[in-house]
Length: 334
Picture 1 (cartoon, helix red, strand yellow):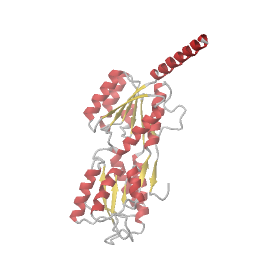
Picture 2 (picture 1 turned 90 degrees about the vertical axis):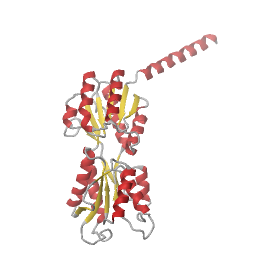
Picture 3 (picture 1 turned 30 degrees about the horizontal axis):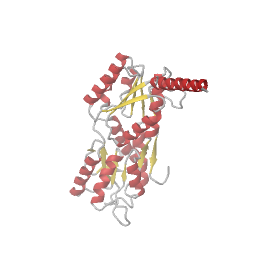
């Protein structure tokens, strides 16, 4: 009996040591996030944590929207000798500096969401981008705008045959924001709509709901004729809708004045607003699918495999990026 107990205890100890060794052998990955409190990025963060739990040892840092802070965090990860860097740039224009440091340390880097130029990524053979095609979100918004507007009978308040719209843009120099802004209007025009900025200028609100609400309040107080609101993300759409509701519009109640609002991301808040009849539509950016792709790519790289080994992902025409598709969402069809 004692001998049997000894064997059982010995096996338990071996299993325990093996388990600890296995955990210790998980590749280390340093994840740099541009800003934790970004609603969409928080969904990506959660997905990265979920899918990496058994395969990667993840450490995340919040750049708090400051590139200098993110640069310091990058230096710490490099000094610690992480196996892979996963980077959501604060400023995509600063990505060459990240690539240069990663290359000097021979650490592979996976950029995501905020896309550096293809030339920057190609300057390091161990760099890759995981993200969406920003133009696609704009195109889908344009299609939604045309569908919602229809013949204009409901929303053309001054009956001039022109869509007087407001454009809430994420950031002035962000490639994703610029593409969404440009292609949403282009696609609406391609569908036959005549588009005109109601206030004569794009409203840059840095993806922020509070800034968008303040800007929308000012527009409403000015008496500007607004017939449509286009937002680069759902956060700004949420802010614009808060101002509209305070003005007695978009309350979801029968007979209330309504100005169509479209966004991007399909956040829980946006889906709720759509279900209540306070927002028209959004474009789904799949944070869970993004996080899953990041983990699969990083795990392959850490194991010395091709980044796409054993996955269904494919490189786009650049040869250094894989794309997670968007999908329109209006609460009526998936």
